[in-house]
Image (cartoon, rainbow, N blue to C red; front, side):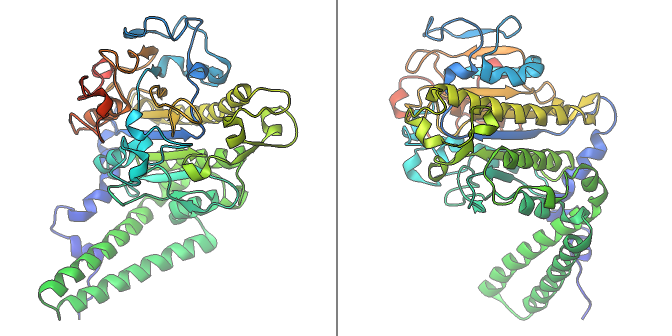
Length: 458
């Protein structure tokens, strides 16, 4: 019997299913001329333990002033608080958003889990698709969505904030070495490359075996087998696309995995994950990455080293400071701020790296939107009536963002908006106009919760 290869299988189908995986490379070829439209990329960075609004509020102006009015002003003449200082070089690309609510999530205890990016009650579990997955679906790549995390010393793969739909949680890889091998093995040498090639050969054999069996079956059994064949072909096409892109992947791959921390849970671990995220975006392996640090209810009690914060030797429990515990003579809020500053220092290094990679008339950062927030609103035990966001980038001018402070009317006031409205904005920009995302807040039934944030629409 003639061997059915992936290439034969898809020949004459206008790329068929393989179009999903070839699309990133075709887009790069089409977008290479100066002035051409560039692809959209999204990097979500979720830090656990809540985001205290004062730590990302610029200037001396009190946040409580005129709670029923929309505040929209430039960041140019506003001083950044200490925790936000690392992002100073990117002020012109930043939009600070205050006043959005995510009350529909609960309010949660310690984390909104999947509801943070999905806009549904925490108690419902994996109730629906999260915004990072929705954007990945609209911007197909070899790896549609990449989840990377820091969740403590013993974590490997967890399911904490991202989902492809009801009951379909997406994985977060917590070990940088394993993430590296999964994403960059096609460009590696030695054992990693051998493993990649062996896996490719196995997929070829499996697809052929399933195809031969298909000729002997009819009806429902054949339909079921077609699903298996589709799954094998999808994995095989990914392997082929990785092999074809190995040169570019090698250029953008971070350091060798043996140099990454193993089984750690500190800031060196987070630095490695952000490096992998940058490499995956730059190599065209994915267009959507979610990096989470201590996010998810079961991971809110991870520890950081006081030495890394310049405070003193010894562990600091994030759950403990959420309940007001002080360390090294510093209040819990001061420690919150020091931890946030460290996170944003690492994020600033990532932004600098993206800004150094040429693309079109600018850099990769010009076509990337970085979304920094928490997985549960304004505190460790939040009311979720306030859910701050820091945006960096405008997606090549597709968003009216950069050098802006937006403060929406307080919860329940006319003109108040929610996190769902922000996510709806992202979907509009990504090519899926819609009026709602997730579930509505029933306590705001008298207010219009539909549509995107008009202030960000071009």
